[in-house]
Image (cartoon, rainbow, N blue to C red; front, side, top):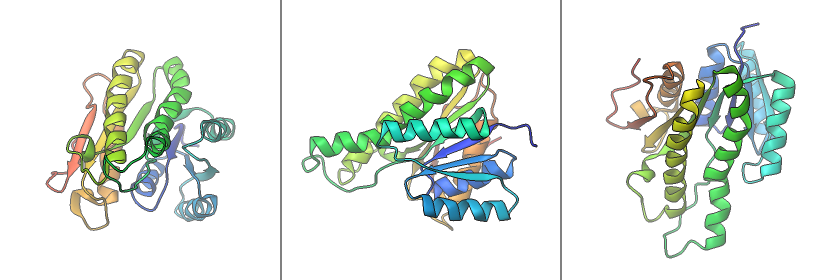
Length: 229
């Protein structure tokens, strides 16, 4: 037993989500991996188990409040208190501001921001009661400099950035860390600071910072110097 609480990663794909999960798992957190494709998650969890990292997969659709709530409840039933929540889910679909329909925007906003809010609300009560815990979001440079061809995602990343700052102000007095990693570029292996493994180190560094005086946002770009202690 490590004594560390579960790390829940919502939106585990082959990039940032997988790298963040592996980093927190290597630090001794039992992992709860959430995404829509359970078969892929199970395979990833088996690979982590082979590395000596405890991991369990849960099917969850971030667009569906009921699906996400059920998965989070299952995590708490199986693994106990959630020590770290990482929300990494997003819809990556192109479309300019004059092309995206309102219904599409709202549907994608449910994933890009709504799921993050719901997940944070779900774990916050326990974290406040324990006066400990970390909530981290994968933000995006589109919140700072929107690309018209990715208008829905840009709106979502602006929303999740705002949510991170709002939750930080609300939860800091209760001993809970909230921060966002604003990824200003395309994450891919071998891309220096934008390599998913390097980005995962940033997530972990933010988690380790104290509640008082910790950063609320870290912007990661091709010119970033790397994680700071």
